[in-house]
Length: 71
Picture (spheres, rainbow, N blue to C red):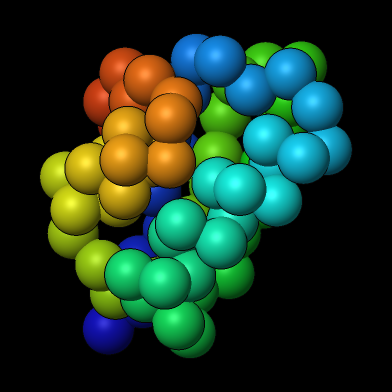
């Protein structure tokens, strides 16, 4: 089941950062759709991976995952 979550991420400053975060999430969940908003520090993920696992992948890519935005 696909679910959309918005992750709060610190440390993203450029298009290279956006590509790194996207790759990290898609390695975890190859079918995930990932949209990065650098200005707002948000990463929108539509996929099947658990939010905490996505956060761990983002942290492992060198960024700081601050949790999921409340609905």
